[in-house]
Image (cartoon, rainbow over all chains, first blue to last red; front, side, top):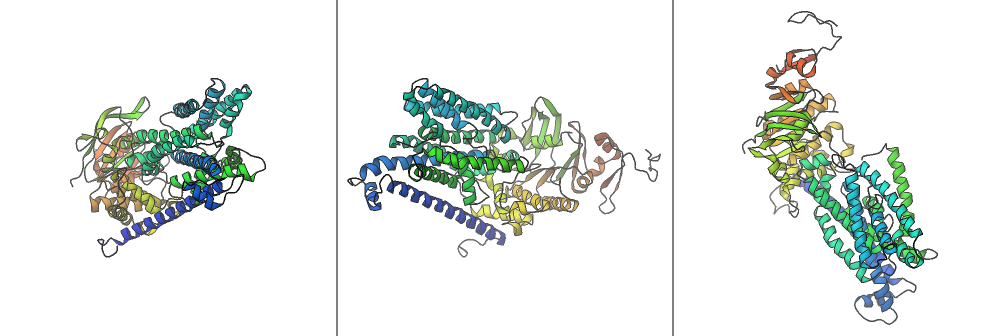
Length: 351
Length: 276
């Protein structure tokens, strides 16, 4: 490198070395998270009501038929792990994008009512309209997008600022939550079980058919977001600076918000609004990846870890069985309170 | 490369329904340093924001070498015209080198990769602003003057031959103000960068600008060499302030001494004593 390339000015060499060192650190930490996720998935594939020997798990994954293990691993645990990981990635990525764009950790889609919108529509569809299956999912995705658009319109006044959007979102979220509670209280018993999943989120009875739309959304919307990470970084410098750097603000903001909402809405339609995963993933990933950049990939991996481990804890570690949303909700609520307390101490912080 | 010509024609711009500036014609002298001065809310920031496309004019147009900047792509414009807004936001925990690297944004498409040329542009910007030794430091750990130099470095990494700055010296103590203005003068001399800046301090503006623009009530009240613009009559008209103008003993540039209501002293050369 030093002999082949044309000689660089000392500063340029140093800039390049610093950049490579930071990129190396980021890569190592993302690899660590990916390793943890792989380990967590391996754990959920191995341990269930009974423990399957790891070798049998590998043989099932390789396509062999192992009596006594194939059904549990291939048909029960694998779809559940895959749906958990994919939904978690969607929540984590969608969450960090919102938090970065609005420069506020409270601006996560599950706090500002986008998940609540999807849930309310789904509950309404199941209980009032008597719908089920794919129709409910489509309704939930549409409602998620509609609520995002509504929040955006309500908070528009010569542009959108983070604080106003967050407060309007929290208000809207409360309205939607009370609507869900009202509909559930009038729900006939036979629809209640199906509708309850929309309260906290659950990967019970996951199938490969559920994982597929989440994967597709991750490829399309997640790909869009990762491709625009440079734009997202420029937007962190404030609207004026980003515009001065040549970011087409109106177009790219709309595109990025739509992609993030799409991720959240599809994952919510398939796994329910797994509480606080979108909200928690970004701040946790930031602490692991270090400051400086918006940790998009680490946040996606953290989201996946939270859902996979949360589901495992809910199924096997806690007395009784709980859907994953109950576990992540129990983790997220104290963190939300901590953030709000800290935001008040720093006089509102940067909004 | 010949110096670019940035100009505004019959410009009307403002916020909401009320135009702040109306019918303004203005051509930035290419290859020179221009300072825009004026009282608060006279439209100087509005003019700067319109010139850099942050604000869409209600009427008229801003052109760069004859082409309306509205018709250019945002990236193409950002490769030719840099802007440092009044109070830019630094993300938490970002290092100096990373911040300056953002200046390369308009030179990249969605798929292009970072290259050695980008490293060199960042290094040139760091060297020019004497911030190279701070490259790995956290931006929050710097002094106000250092931080402002880093922001200017970011705009420099954009490699534009036009640089617009909105009050680059506000909130800086006098030594740091001089540091930043000296840097801008260096850039103008060494790289031929055309500089337009909004300044509050009339004396600094007269000292560093080749071309001084005094704005009042959304229009240009006076424009030209500092010696012709910074006069007692213009200060009275633009700021509503009684002042005395004299030649700066070192550079010979005009220097303003504000009088206010309480200043007493020797009789004014033109007539009666200044009394309250």
